[in-house]
Length: 601
Image 1 (cartoon, rainbow, N blue to C red):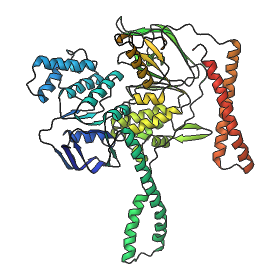
Image 2: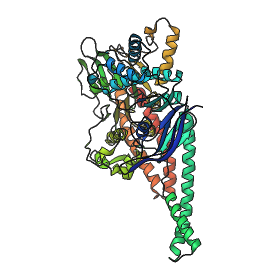
Image 3: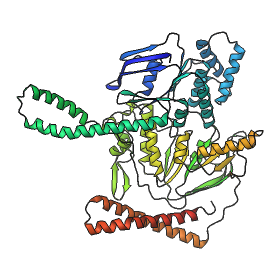
């Protein structure tokens, strides 16, 4: 393959923190490379070095002569005083030959911008939101017709339709790619090689994301085994060091030097990809929320909800999808009471405790330490059975080491701030989580932890996200916002929904506007009035709630007793026999409760 870029011995430190040291790799023509790393370990810094935005502390970056590189920055900027079309033409004149005439150039610019839902090309760039600015910058990068693209989070601020278009565009293109993205489907379908930045070094995996997961686990298992062997040998050598006198011969001094190298290896921390965090969320009753024929519009041309009815069930995990501007975030703010409906109302259950993770994030005191920012919310979280997790332990679970917890907030990267914000939401121990674009700026490792947390979460969840992989892992059905107050309830995850849409489109290829209009997806905005529970059924539900709460309490205490190591043989035997019976009884009562709760929903 024709080499494009060769990187040798690259080193970079920020303050007293070394991001990477003496890393080397090459990029050849036609390669499609995804760069993966935890937030704060130097992904964007490495892209900035390769793109020539910054200079390294050491090492070299050599480009093939005449190589044309286009770079989509995480936070792009444009010259002030330009309209959208002027900004695009300015970029094109900088990077393209003058053979193309102005009219054709404008046509191509408008085509790309339309694909990315930017329709007003005369709008001043200063008036664009951060998401709109990122989409204009993406159009500019694609228009440059470069030999190689460097893309930093290209799917951020794109809706699902845009992401699928970009995915198809890049898959068909012959351009060489180096990109950072948290979108694992996008990564899997576009990239054929993964670079992982970890422990200040670089690891290469010659395969897609699925291959990377397999080989990374093998690497971690091997490293953990080596640390375990070093620990065993370290204990033996430590005893020898304590016994030997200070005056040692040549061989003893060599063994002493080897001991210090062994000590360094033994004190490395092991990695665990199977972390599990099961918090004891506060009790949530049978009444969650009911949207009673709600309508909301911003003028005649911006209808969000139209006579919308919905009865939310206990333990429901709902995903909300739709194009930008269809009202997904507005719906969440209405549910939280931050925006008033024009008509109708939301009736919220008395036991509901919301935890809200917004797109805007949370303002932190930059001079506050990370640990203090979380302790301001709570000192510990309840794990059930009398067990607690301290704020420090909780932060460690979300990849903040004890040393990082003592850092000031201003030192955090954008992704680390989002991770810290997530911790402050979860530390409040809510029983109803509302997550608005939680995957933006979070690294893949954090997303895996969050997905596992939500999978075992004993409460309700609503997620608005453009991350298809995340939605498939977390939600059990969707509300599809189609615009103009048209909202559909789909009984499945996002991949199943897209497959259903493709089948409908294939069945009616001449009428694409009818996609999603079939009766197999019920209309959520024109429901029949639901059947109400009978008096006997209501009494049964109330009785079940009390019984379930008592059984859950007994189960927590039983599990704590089994883990305590204080039970005698007879008590241990009795507890071991009781636990599976208790679990079966709890499952049976919860299933009956769910059956009753779904009547009329």
